[in-house]
Length: 189
Image (cartoon, rainbow, N blue to C red; front, side):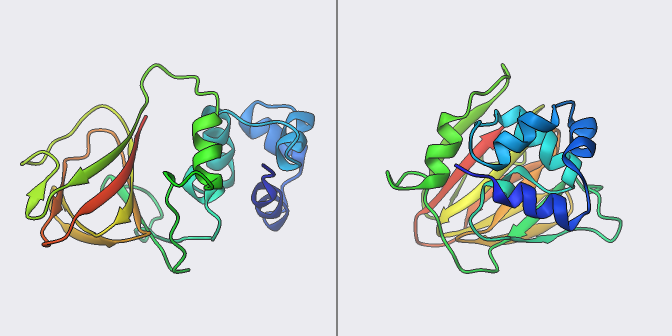
């Protein structure tokens, strides 16, 4: 898989391969190989590249550029970022022809603290029954249905194709307040 998005974003931000290498700790040659699809990056490498380019790993993996809703100071001060599916494109990583699935599950992951799961939440139910916080960052992508995300001081609604990034130790509960099935893809790291 080519990561043209990395090259396009890097060029848009007027960052050379050498400069990106300095920010990530990787060689310009290795980064060029990633951009051209010669080398597959680990999730750790994608995270470093995403951080250096000030985007999310989900953005680098997605087919369409998501709209990121951030606070005015562009930080995760409240412990989360919402990524809205402004393109209307829905992908399902459990379809065998999904590039996203193939990319994510074939990446060599270099961490002992990573959990990838597909979660179904029954109608009028929730993920844990109460707000919880844990020591891992979390990305939840809504595959099917509508999710109500209860945070410490806010309640958000996410639809199919939307995602939320939660910082470690952010209190949250995922609720299915509808009569339909809610299915989501969760990555904790």
